[in-house]
Length: 415
Image 1 (cartoon, rainbow, N blue to C red):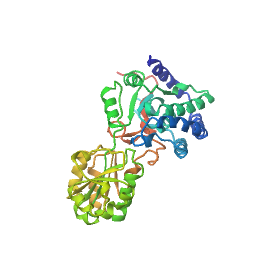
Image 2 (tube, rainbow, N blue to C red):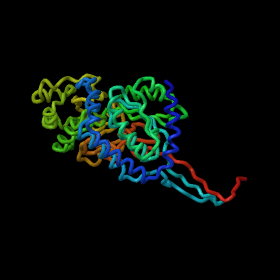
Image 3 (cartoon, rainbow, N blue to C red):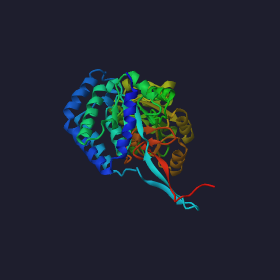
Image 4 (cartoon, rainbow, N blue to C red):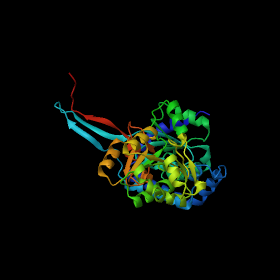
């Protein structure tokens, strides 16, 4: 198959986006939100076809699964995006030179945004909505695990675009086969930026093989450090929420570090996790303390590979550390630079942690489950970047823009 046809059409569709005013964009997005809900039954029927191909024990199963409430939540995210101001056209800076040249730095769309993702049908809506709001064209390559779900959602969006007589190529959903992935990785000159969303292996593969610029949305190997001064009640709630709220997402807790001076509180601190069927991989010190109270079926000795693992399931590594310094060193060694947290009442320790931990999102006395575009007031997210160039953390509307220089003169020539 000649995939360049898709990419050429997408490139040409950028002209369509330039011609759309912000009012029209919002009307279309509102219709998309309504259409998703009104087509819930057909979307869920297609989603069931995908679910039937996957084991319920697969960590990706929860990400793949749609429901009436999840579709309503996806539509609500679209509505949230409508309420946000588009950054396109914003003047970032301006000045007039001595020769009277007027120079402005103005936000503009990136152009054609490619996204490769796995079993996450909500990404189809999120990426389209954020790209459409910012005047970008979206080229999506979903995985075969979500093939029917993605196609059903894309068809709903295309029906809305047709209703408004807007070029359907502003959203391109590529076939789910591997050849389409390879073609997209090589779409230099057609696609301006490529964003992978999924497992670390997918992200690594895209980074190593893409011939176009890549924004990494890395895996989440997430830690929370319970300091010597940590509040026990806060700690119980935060750790339980960070681990169990939704285990298949990248902001889910993977490792808890506990100050050795709080060993006496360890059983109570982690007791709620037993009620959530969380399996603990405990180091030697924590195992000796926990074995008297934590369910034996859920408690195992930690091995080196348990530290630095993104579990994406009801599993959690536990390690006792001497002090804040050891916690910081452990995080520096094993972190994926996604989200890291401290539970502490010591202002100096909190400040050191927030300043020294190198991650896209750092927390004090709160669950890492908040690392999310919608939670950060971005409406939705295109992904959570763990790199430092261009964008970092949850990527919303601003992160889908670049800028250009606009110069106005009156006959000036350079000597």
